[in-house]
Image (spheres, rainbow, N blue to C red):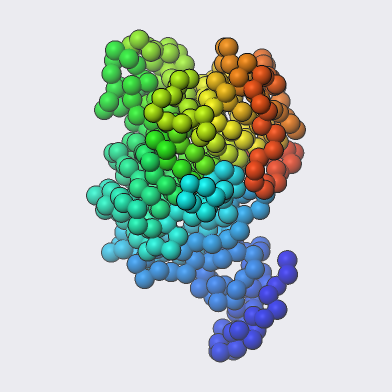
Length: 416
């Protein structure tokens, strides 16, 4: 690490004891990130080169910063103030740089920055949250506590959890430029799809809500460091023309459940289907053939996930540095109509059918695979296909080596 040589001159105005403390913290900051919550303001003054500590906002919310390496969200957090005793201290790792499709300029957006440039607010009730999520004005929204119900996110928003949990359904419908990070999102169907308020017994689990839906031409969406589970229909589905999406460092899982009722029942599989990209082979309203481009990196599909990890139609989906370990699954990645999939530098551990084509899709879809680890797997590892191969993503990224990947994803995915 190269220290900033200008810091002594920049902080000559400080009293001598404080300057000495700043110097000591500056030199030791790489190995002492856990103390940033205490010394955040001092380290910020020192311009520490290894990470940015958040400057406390008068509203009681911490800022964000830090650069990502190899596509990871890096850095460390600062201290949030309080909102009438609501949030209190909130040390969250600053946001890194988005990698993948969500980073690219198009559709009037330069890159995904969420609510950057807007005010930072702290909320503690679902009524406050719904108010701040609405509209298109840029806003950074910090959450702590549990929020139950349905939430719709507008545009130009960053939602950051500080030990926060949403129970119900989160929707981004036509939303533009949104970041959702450091959140636990639990769907309605924890062990039982009938808990979902929209459950229809004549259909089954697929009649209910996803935990998170990104749809209807939503674009430039970044889901980072989240824990997503127990969606009734899916955990995180990306459909109906959605585009320019990155999902990173996120954990997907389910509680055990069955799906025994209705004309779409899946029995013991429990409709525990994590991620659907594209909902129909014959889109009419939305231009799926030129959308549904998603980057998945450093994610973990684990306990009780049965299928759709992800299941893709049409889009160019790039999966690198991911981990699959759900022994309950019947397959991991499935290419459907006109999907173009690149999967690389990832680990499949103890699972069945890592990569496959949906029946009849081999003529229009493609799967390209490189540098993956298949440890104690069974079944199909399909590659090729009749569709155009997706070989070179149009953005910069650097995959991590796979040697310690399983351990790092298990330790670092989910809220930080």
